[in-house]
Amino acid sequence: MKVVISLGDGALLRRGEPLDAAVQRGNAARAAAIVAKIAAKHNVIVTHGNTPQVGLLTQQAEALAQIRPYPLDVLDAEAEGMIGYLIEQELKSLLPKRQVVTVLTQIEVSDKDAAFNKPSVPVGASYESNQAQRLTRERGWVMEPDGTRWRRVVPGPQPLHILELPAIRLLLQSGALVICAGGGGIPVTVTPTGQVRGVEAVIDKDLAAALLAHQVGADALLLLTDVDAAYLNWGGEHPWAIHETMPEELRKHAFSEPMKPKVEAACRFVEGGGNLAGIGLLEDAAAILEGICGTVVRPTGVSLDFFPQRRPAAGPPPPPAPRAETAPPPRPAAPAAPSPQPAPKAAPPSGPVPSPQAPPPKAAPAPAPRPSPSPPPKAAPAPAPRPSKAAPQTGPRPAPPPPPPAASLPAPKAAPKPEEKAWVPFDLPPSGPDAAPRPGQKPPVKPRPGTK
Image 1 (cartoon, rainbow, N blue to C red):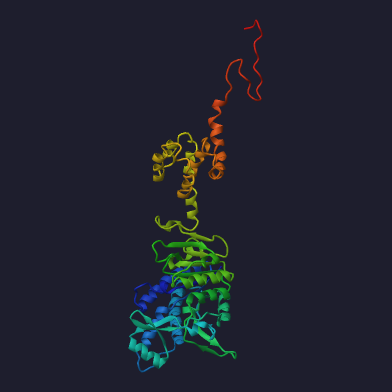
Image 2 (cartoon, helix red, strand yellow):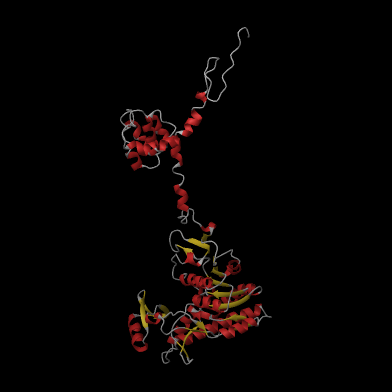
């Protein structure tokens, strides 16, 4: 099976860790050990994030005031080569008989993409207001507020085509483990004459991974990060971890910004012909591929399934649950029907609800409570219709035409049950030779005169 593994920023650099070389090498070794286990059974392509590394290179470039900073596409290439080198070296140590190759990957974008008119992806360091104004004048950077400071934002265009795709396919056919499209690849434009030029933009790494998986014909796409699954109501009081779903169901829900591109990438890959897209922890990579852990997106199957062990007891149930809650209420009202004889005594057994306790003193005079069958159905639909059935059964009150039609219809439905059980013992014929025969029964044989 051909598997594309995308190592997110959280998988390569844990929260709060410094960006020094030793830490990054240790994280690369940890990720390579997990990838190597999957590569032992499947044909693997690795891609990765590089947001923290690009930020580091940006700040280092700013330290040299006498040199104008390098363009963002060049910094993307530097970060892709740096991380690819670390991962490649660790994988080569774990898989000595396997060829491991890092490919510097350029991904084509359209210069007419709407993202170029509205930059929104923050990059680099944050600046004071006066610094931000100076950089806007001198370099033409677009700045946006970042708390009390300002930060540069760049376009985030959609990835269209991988320029090194033929070379990547040849490497895969030869059995090599390929590392490519790191950090979303290097964004470039291609002119009608074939000229390739880099642009200062950032391609989302998850969307680039989905494009890579689709164009190499992968069977599965794993989007690995530092969160165990995609959650509904993330950040709320009761988040729900999604276990298995389909793209059309997943698109109905909103996700927070770090998870949003991963969900979109998973949907795009599966909608484009992929068999499985998984989102989850780096440590759960093999289990996600087997459909045991993480959020698994398939073309068909379960519409929306949650992890049972992660459902909070006090949390709101999924949409199907409230339907089960509406079924039981009509059941307790049934025992109130077989007590039509005394009105004041029938009210207490109808249930422990506080509302039936008020009617008994009003129902003490027999004729008074009977002419009011209309208020009970308005107050409570379940218990109210039961006493109204008892009222039409009394002789004087069924005469008025308005109330009886509504109450008389259910009355015959409730009557058969008590008649079958309550009246059978009293329907036996009187005993003795002079008793009249029952319908369908032979008449008794009278003794002849002179016989005992």
